[in-house]
Image (cartoon, rainbow, N blue to C red; front, top):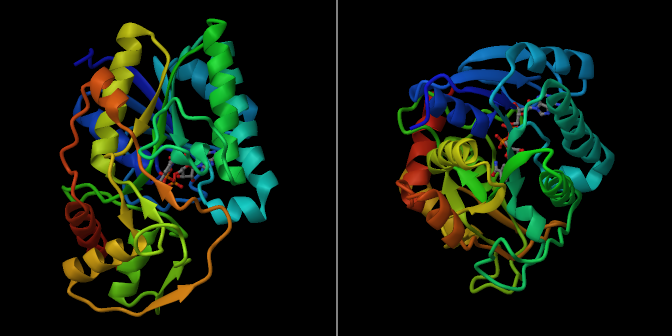
Length: 327
Ligand SMILES: NC(=O)c1ccc[n+]([C@@H]2O[C@H](COP(=O)([O-])OP(=O)(O)OC[C@H]3O[C@@H](n4cnc5c(N)ncnc54)[C@H](O)[C@@H]3O)[C@@H](O)[C@H]2O)c1
């Protein structure tokens, strides 16, 4: 492990994934600094030194980065909903692209060069090869995926010119909660399948919708590669250490290399909770690729990443434990 004196700045570090990474970094004695505007999250706990601030406020952003002088920035802050990005594209380009450029600009002015980017499997669109490798063509089919692909292009060009060292982590479908039960998904408006299914099981939402049952998959519903948030947090720790020690820019898929259909997920949620809830089949949503599964050969080889929670049941059990703790 790298020195405990390393200073890590997390944008969006009060959100779901950022807070799990922040907790892990604190455990390993990293100095954690967080910038978050709390627009989309409602954290019960924030790890590290917290600045409640919006990335769009350039002056304040530069002031924080100059003052803190982090060794590395982990950039989680963004809007994350595919359907919303189709309805309100400008909002997504403004926050996910515009504010990332403001962040990179502040880093440049403050002389901070190391960057971990929260990218997404949405950059692949409908891939020609499944499991999809990092070398696949980027052809996003919704504005959300487009915003991530644009930032990746900017990072690649900056790295080639020696302006930045970065790792782009392309997350597949992140789910689960801290196995110690301290934190979990804290979205103000949850849209993800597993969280919504658990809220239906709990009686907070009347029924669960399946968007599309005529996809070219064995049971007609979309297939996704669900990854436990703690395995993803570990991937960040390894990526950060790799970047700080080797300075080599890379792009890495973060997924398990296997997928579950919406129907399969629902059936495991019913099994874990012991509750048979109402499910309604409805038409496809725009912007959903039929199948997304990661080829994770590269991350396993380069970072020696070894998943510990690679079971859909474990993911759902940890999420259910968390959900039951919420009022
Ligand atoms: N959840 C997933 O399955 C998934 C999959 C692929 C990629 N990602 C990416 O991972 C990152 C984190 O996602 P998450 O699921 O933790 O979402 P989240 O909404 O819980 O976290 C994002 C945090 O960023 C904050 N934020 C947004 N815009 C901001 C701004 N302009 N200034 C300051 N703070 C701002 C939000 O308030 C929130 O706390 C995002 O970049 C997302 O695109 C997530």
